[in-house]
Image (cartoon, rainbow, N blue to C red; front, side, top):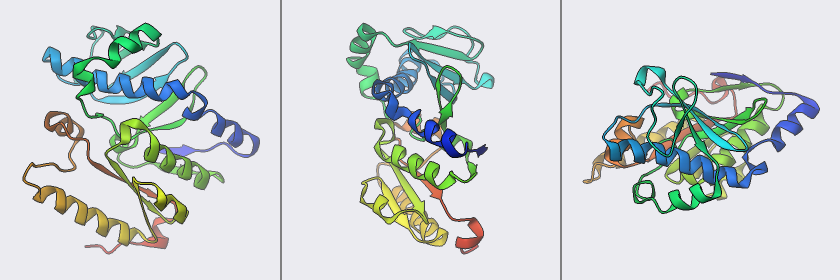
Length: 239
């Protein structure tokens, strides 16, 4: 996936439109994704793959993979939207009720890689960078965008079991608990190999896994790589 960033004044405006402009939005995105997994699990239906989230002023819109058979009959309290789209109204009384939902409270975030990529006409748009596999960012504001993306992954409540490996970025990011700053891509990939090997060796089987396995195994551990330098400038060992 490739994103061309706005330039000049538009870039400043874009920055103001990130989730920080809607503090309650963080809680609603977190709640809606955990509830997606919880309600499907409790009703015995498969959890559909999340394509993207659109945060509207009055509801959260979950756009789901059509091939997963999400359909237009979502479990309560979700409401049907367009095809393969479920809506969660942003009502205070609903938030209070759902906060006490035992299923939602005990579910790890199923999409810890969700990050803000911009704003449409009516909503803030988030995608799961883990599901996208790779994300190329171009434009003069690319470094600023990657810095903001890293900060978001390091602070949002649904990414609490994510480690962000930041390559060629500001060293002060390493002060954040979820960030491992490295100078080279080789160093970062070596760290990933060690972390994966460690998780595989644990007796409880906790490890980085595909999102379906993550839900089934009730674990959300993930390593996400953010590279600010061009790959050729920090080439990894082919092994």
